[in-house]
Image 1 (cartoon, helix red, strand yellow):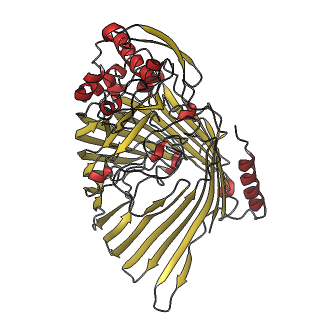
Image 2 (tube, rainbow, N blue to C red):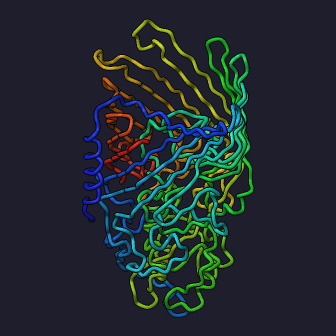
Length: 634
């Protein structure tokens, strides 16, 4: 493990700076205003921040260095065609995966960030809003090295770790106002011209659209995808994805009617969600698989939607319609295009190139590994094998591949191919077949609505000024990744709903009021991450049977400020009723308008209900960590 010297140094510097300040009011500083001779004024504000996550858990099992089979002897029973006339022989061997070096960093994340926000008022009606963001990750981790693994895997993202690049085939910069390298990112999450005159507001340019405010959950918040390169979903829960929404070029207009009703609509360029890259801390896709992102075929697509919101008596109501390409994408097997022979089987590479597989030691080594990671990815191990054979049969059949009718034959077939890829025909007992996937995008329609009501109970009671919000979304044509990764995907009707209660309550008489929020969420077909529930419940010795009853989860959060608002205590809890939880306690210190220090802890437990692959947290419970954010505002 690497030492925490860099973390200690960063914290010490910021602590020293903070102690030189006086404990003044903790309100944010007002933006600086610059006025030119022509009457144009510009307001400027910004911040610099260090963001650290210190691991108290294990390595990410979806990466080469955290692969749960590294250093573990695994027995394989295979049937390679070694006998007379090509008759299969039963071969039993033991293989030990030795690719990932079994390294685990003390750090899950260390990023340094600077942001500049400007608003230039050209006239009483016209303004230009710009936000510039720069992030650097120095890579203070025990990084995966493809050279040590003797890997020749195709694709630059599967070489040395790249923390920020969003790679799309045949597309140089899929996000138009973003520039990235392996260790840095510079982007303009906001750059738009705004016209504001009376009740009319129009924004033209790169912008983020937020239609939802629930913590963890997104129901009506459908306009934008999310960017998970910056701490996945493990930032402060109370920030409600405010820093995660992927900006898009578009036009948004809203009109506030005299009776209090608001009409809001947008048309924008489709931009997908962005996930952590392979062999980085929060990578969500097993790195034994190569992803080919097909967004280049969708970068000219357009999303649009509108929302109406107002009051009817004491009841707040809203309705939305949005036509979009689902930014999460769907996945299926795709031809690898890699002509690399199986050791000792000349000419096999030409056939493998038109199947979803590539010979490389960073792939899967055994049937046990295959079924384990299929379950972790909420996929069917047997179904995945059979779809790879069925959809690419012209090349798979000549290699001897067949659709397995049961678990036993599937294990033998998989072990046969993994063993041959590792050199079984030449007397070597190793492994390595990489799978290749394509990320595709599908259009859908979203129809939703919501109600809100503020109760008026007895002063000081729990119902006094209690706010209830209910949101529901119906998607008649949502597409999902099939659990077998078949080329046809799955099309389903999905209902999504959340009921939220929130209020300020004077819990401690000597302290300011506590902000409390409780939420319940239901999704009929998928979990919080959009994964189809039919792929849940698998294990190393069982293909996924799926789970019934939909996805149900509770969330609870509180914020307790202290006198002078210098200190604030936070707590957020997310509980999946299938048996997993995320608990995030935190504390915030803001001694004045410039400095902020935040300390929070992420605790994840996926084993409350038995099989962790029945709930949303299985596979991500490695990420127990201590988060530290130290910021200076200017």
